[in-house]
Image (cartoon, rainbow over all chains, first blue to last red; front, side):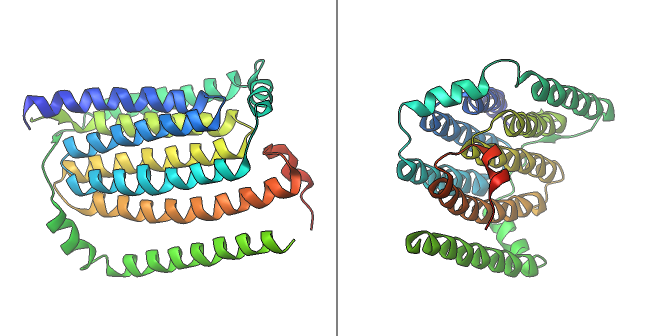
Length: 169
Length: 102
């Protein structure tokens, strides 16, 4: 791993964490989604520096491309007005968020302590290209691919059914 | 030892997961709850990829592909439910779901 990729990992990780924090604290849904896109793109860089170029491409195409666009379409259909920001501010006002944030921070400190104490050896950054992933995916993991296709079919039928019921009522 | 230590990748995954968890717990808007679930799935995926990269095996990346499929299915059904919920209740408040009969 060249030093450039190492620096790129740290910078992209910092960007990912920062944009995720901003995404979960925004009052307007569209702003949160834009920060979420930045977070996914930063994670794509992280995957690339970790030696997973296929996943870097999939992160951009599927997460930042398809899933966030789905969210954006729903925000467009909801047509939330200016008062949505006020309700959101009221929901987040006061001390409601201190409890969850404090408890999750305690869990995070524990996890970091345990990982640091384990003294894991070795570094990340060895490139495992699309060829190896494809060979393993359609070899030992073939059953998993079939199950994933069944899951997606189920999700398709479910989403279609829920959408159809909406137009009838 | 070469490159970034593996524990940093795992810690990045943990931080993202906890950020998603905190968002899930502190927001009342259903749309933000779905966004937080996406962030949590991503954090778990980063840990998988870091571990797979450490042992130079493609298994971590394959697990991330399955997480991707699960996230796509979850978000499509979740957003369809959210649209129906909004038409029925005229709000995105998760607390209003406690009165969702019929």
